[in-house]
Image (cartoon, rainbow, N blue to C red; front, top):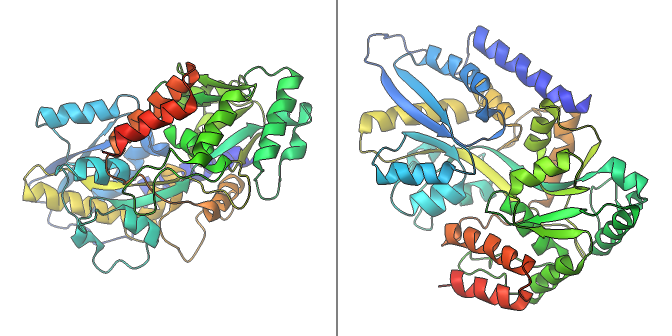
Length: 423
């Protein structure tokens, strides 16, 4: 039941929003102003990839702001970046985009393609400081106004773990395990007959937050330094982790898989664990009917201490198309979706993620699944995805994993990675 409650609650909220008056913000009573047509491109962030969901969310906005019309185009994580780059080359960018700081700040913002929206942040005191820090560059230019956040994790097939006598290595209360327990669990599952216990997918950058977190957590390594000026993958801890994964029977390096492919393999029962996982993925896989086993979300294994999980932040940015009228209208849309109130709550719930500020009530108070995933936020680690050269580092990362899978020595592959990204 926990896995369908989120869908039921979301459908009820969106139905209500489409039919009931919206108390948030003044209604535009003019009705005579020329309509401003804006385009929003959104990556598949929870229910924001669903046309029906987005249509319901926009119903209230269009009613309260009849002089602004939002046209939505969904893009994906496989081709989306290429689509945006082509739009840059063709001078045909959308007005708004819904994604995270690693693209809006570290990539397009750094290249001068985004509008500085620091005025939207004036007076904002409630958004978590770690989230705020990721939404601006070192010069104080804000390119993201956040809507939601999550903590990425991994997942295991509880049914298989219990059958293989590997459940003994799981701390059910905290959803954690040690590196040694991870090793022992893999061995148990392999002895049970599971050939592909887990896959270090490296066919592209999609879902790379999972493989980065796996490697960094195993022996306490980091991906960058604290200042986010250098990549630190060549540490002894990371090298040791990669060598462990390469040597562990049952863990395969698979360059035919991206994160989405690994999710599909896990959901189909072909892998006993997934390294690319979060609350929205479980909701999506449940709704699509792909799961017929009990998924148990897990923190990544650590040798000692608490895990440091990768955070995800998603929000709205405005591409600088030089039209102040359109920019003002885009800011109106962002304020509507992100200001505290019912519109913001509906928009957050549609993502299957969590608010970026403490509210006076729990959005998921009666939702067992979301409450379960909410516990992972206490393990949130450094948001390093705004480090200079991030886009290149992502490409170098999966290529490094691919080379290791093909037999290259870990130290050599890591050295090549470091030389390529720390320039």
